[in-house]
Length: 242
Image (cartoon, rainbow, N blue to C red; front, side, top):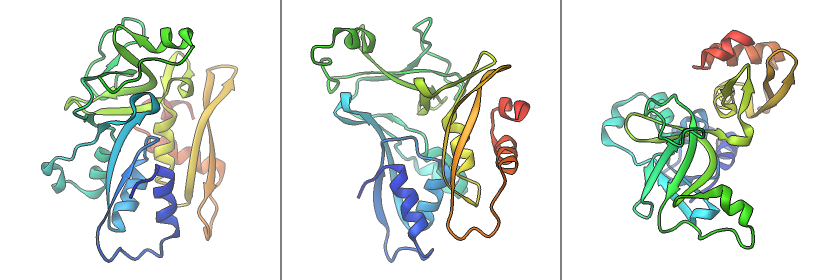
């Protein structure tokens, strides 16, 4: 079976907590899945595969191919690894993350942000009767996805945001996806969405919209939620400015 991360989240919330009688394979794609959602899904007995693709690529062109050596890692670490988009499939010639200014590949350090670009035979020829969109998306044989990501040292791609959703604060590019992933680990949070909020000093700061799980005995305050996010984000910016 297959479903977007929101479907996986629904499965974990409607479940009575009992594991499945037998393993069920499920493919997720369509949005960056929070590691916390993958962890809860697999704890029920689902075996999750994670793919990445666009309408313009005709489907999944990047997959988080699993390595046996990762099986010995703790469940939380395995979920974090599986949340990455992965490596190219046979139908895709090249996958890269480039600096939008220089046009060169970013460092493979899992930290340096850039735009995800793809090259392969399965990519569309272009948008119908839309030369402006084609000029923006197709350059020198590369398709510019509009997704912002990082490349890890092992060659695995990880999406950090859509370019239009990146929060620009104090001259820094901040990932809304990273904050959402952290908020999903809060025991009271069912769903999380983070957007940019205008700020007179920083220009923009994160603003989170949350839905809580049913039956929560003590609803967390806004201050506690932001404190939780600030304490658990790996990026020091969040801890500095909240």
